[in-house]
Image (cartoon, rainbow, N blue to C red; front, side, top):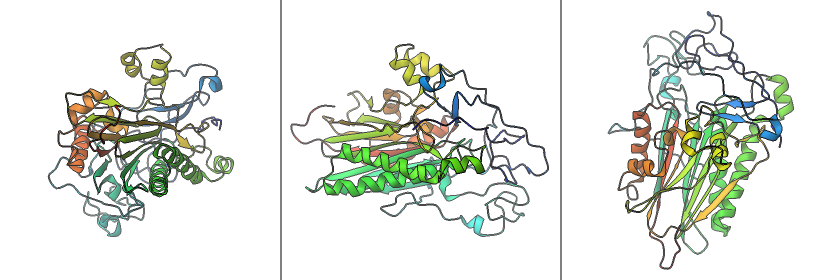
Length: 420
């Protein structure tokens, strides 16, 4: 499906430049009362070149549709170093855990006690309104989705809001089942919402639910894991598309907003077989238990940088140093291009772990070797601990984005299994 031209960007807070929705009374990042201060117009982005502007990337149109390469993006306004009321820190000894029931591993979080009560956790004086903001100081109250953890059988996942964003727009789905012959199978899906699109948190949640449920239903029926992954991505795309309703009607009533959108990456791990699937720039890494063996990245980004490298126009170092590096060329959403799910299967010849993550993590451990260096040596037997360590690594690096990671152990392959 062809990409529609981008509409005008959302207005931004005049204090911290955080985008907000029409009708918001307070800035979700700094708490500024938006009803008393004139709002600075958002930066204008050329609608012929850009479809969405994300936290760390831009969704761009193909060369054939835009008639030429995309220009460098407009400089982003400076953000504060850190917001108040941080999400629970996974580096602490007693992290908050929010396990989710199966088969829907990432449920819509219920309102926090602070939102159900009347007292703001920041000023201890103002009443909290129905949207979860203090009517006195404007601070957003802590939400359950700010930090989520789930351990499901042999695998685990952790998602954190990070240190620079007022909400978590990532989501994950994890689960385990069995193939018809009784062979165990682990499933992990990680989604990253496109922040400048409307309701990106809903998009990532809908996609992660649809994909994980599809996989957990298809694998016991005997569907090959790679075909099941392809079908799961298609199901996730339909789920995100449905959030937009009729795109033409949505644009008529909300002309300044793009359709909900997100990226997706996932894995299925069975005895001797490792399947990955993705759309966007979230990634899967393979880290063997024997660290003398090389680690590997198993996905290729749908991004400007990856296109430049694939075309031989730049080295990988040059491409990822460019300001346009994180401009994504594939995503799930009603205004995305024609869906092209990527899938691949591998047969590692030794045990290890599969790391499934958003760019909130891999920005701080980009190469396979860098990722292997921060994955704990006992990750295969302590996946939840390892996921917490990896999220902590991203927070220690600055936590500029939401960060989500799933750690999936890969067992020792059966005798005679091939190499990756």
